[in-house]
Length: 461
Image 1 (cartoon, helix red, strand yellow):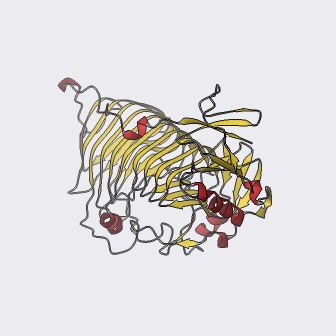
Image 2: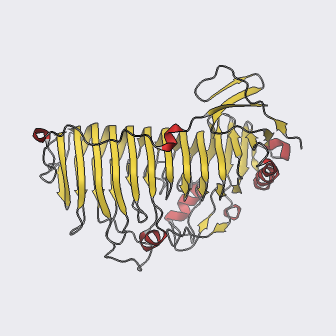
Image 3: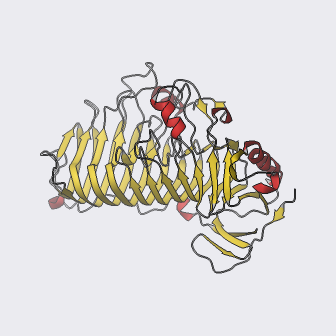
């Protein structure tokens, strides 16, 4: 099998992501690769029937020899490439042609079991371990999963049926998961029909997720879009998500296991998303947040036909914290709630949690938002004896649905302020306009992930 040297450094006029000219192709990436091979060269068959699991793994294993010699790229050409789970390597790019479809095998034996995450203490679906994700990596650096809007189809219906029938002893696989890794790019792909969560970086850092389309039936169980979990320095932007659960769910471990592991999610940017989630949140913080969540910056979000715009989910026994949250520039159409904070979420991994482990929820800032066709402006519920503090809401206009709730704000065990909010908030968020407040805080400094720039890379096909 010949490994083809890619063409790098040749600059041609390109769009924001990729442009082809004859056999020469360009794309944007955090790092370019010196070596490229097609999955076909390893004997893969793209007929949608032939199982290529061993071929994908053999291709990655072969290309790993170039890990410290310029890196490598595995090219997936047009076709339907059926495969079970495979592991990727460091200094590696998986690239999908626009007419390439990776089909996830529906053979449960193609997904080996792995241990539960230490910050969860058990699988998310069941007390046992987990089925490994379709595309998986651990202890890696410099990994890129990208393409020209090629598709990865999780073929999740079989898994959804087993979940609903309570036939699963282990947690369902995700489409893409990286653990204990850094310098990750996931971009320019379409992900459909995931068995469960779509993208799950966990215990990782320096992550760029960009130009991803995620589509799942809105009644499919727990098909979250993107779930950064105990991660640092992450940027999620320019994505379109239709989900059976939260579009973006920020997490950091579950009850006593997350408290013990103690790895927060922090330095997170979420911007320029369009999300549809009729049964859940556009952005959820929690409910598994026992390792802490801090410094989240979300802006320029379009929410359509969703249960809630921003939701904080926690409860007694969670411990941890959610603090320094900054949201601005939200546009919402057809919502059940614009804002929702929950201090009574429940859902514990086992009966060993400490009911006195109370979370800290503070410095939550929402500003510059508009919403229409909303049933209820806000449902804000802290914890008795543990109020959610320093909530700030400013410059928000909410237009109610024709059959809106009579009471638009319900607030218990919260403390904060407001300015320029309609309809008028509850008494726990008193108007501060006459005392100098015009808008809630949004940081002006830049996070390190914002300074990551993509290079123009090229290869020959």
